[in-house]
Structures are given as C-alpha cells and as structure tokens.
Length: 97
Image (cartoon, rainbow, N blue to C red; front, side, top):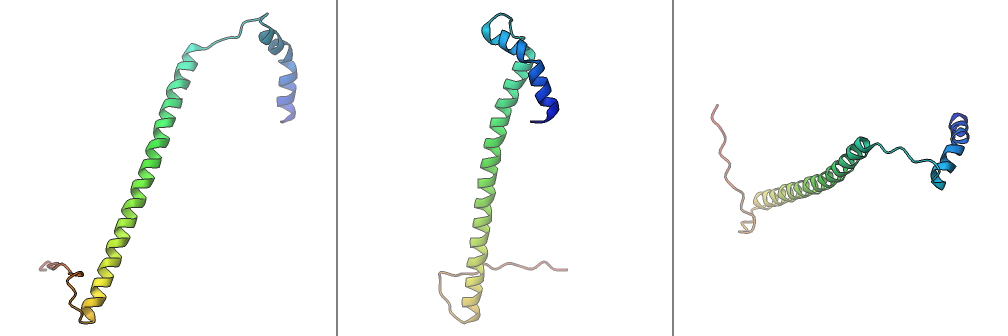
C-alpha cells in the first residue's frame, strides 16, 4: 500500500467503525449498483462468447490442417502412381485468362 493510501485509510477509520457498528448509515448509490450489475452480466456473456469463438477457431484450424494433410497425402500417392480409391483428388478447373 502506498503512503497516501495508508493515510486515507487512517483518516477514514472512525467513519468505517461507526458504519460497521450501525451508528451511521452507509451511502448507497442505486444507479451505480444497477450499472455495475449490467456490466458484470455483460462481462460474463462476453467471456463466454470469447471462449466459444476460440474453440470454434481452433476447430476450423484443425479441420483445415486435416484437409491440407489429406490433400498432400493424396498428391503424393498420385505422383507415386498409386491409384487408391481412398485418395481421389478433385478436378479443379483453371480459369482462362
């Protein structure tokens, strides 16, 4: 704790004790409480969305890597002259220029 923070806490000690014993009421800001509650709910939803988006991106990357690997394996088999029906390379027409 910094020196300034320490001095503030010492200065507020009397009021804090009085609030805890019930001699003085605490100030309640209902507008702040409402905004804070909405913020916490939004934060929770955003964190869940972020987690789901990361999982989706990881799945897409994995799927893409699997397709590339399968394509490379199929291309190698065709180059070696193996005509296995498991690795059929699609015909991709080239565009005329």
